[in-house]
Length: 269
Image 1 (cartoon, rainbow, N blue to C red):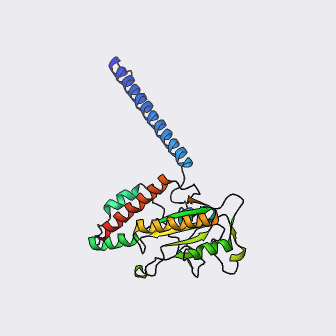
Image 2 (cartoon, rainbow, N blue to C red; image 1 turned 120 degrees about the vertical axis):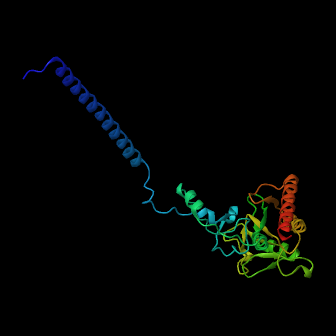
């Protein structure tokens, strides 16, 4: 049976359409394979989120560096004396998962405590530590007997932890010390049994606010004590990084103490 001209044209047109469809489908298949390959390549370079161990907190976040004295950690015997303006406790790492935001939005609302309770909590947590050092001349460390004599002239008391403490002149201020003193040779505490043999490159004076006195009054007492020690021992008053304390630095420190005192009193209102 022979096909006429019209039937032949329709047959060729159908074959051409099939070829076009096959070419189109082949192109789609190639693009899909290319995308899958890119995804596999990218996922191979990226870390596996769900298989990774949870990140460990940086141990340095749980410490406070006091220079030559070393780092004061929560288990250090001076940790309860040397309180820094950031509490010493482990810091939990933040969740980096992008889905955390959606989870937070879908989570039920939590009722906040009353304003008075929040103010009480803030007032309890607010704290500031002022640190000064008295540094000995290079190659001429402070000796234990001279330190003890200078401390007695300032009415320091040596507590059970080996820290010299300076209390307010007036008894009405309470039993809390205004500031304390350690030395810059580890572990930093004064041992009565070995004090006569002690040799240290410097002294560390630290004051916690709020304390038994107003902030600026306590700072004045701290600076006077540091000056007395520096004169008697032949040392230099410095900041916590052992930089010589200048008048502009002292004025700036006094302003910071006054600003903290205003904020702290505002929390109590």
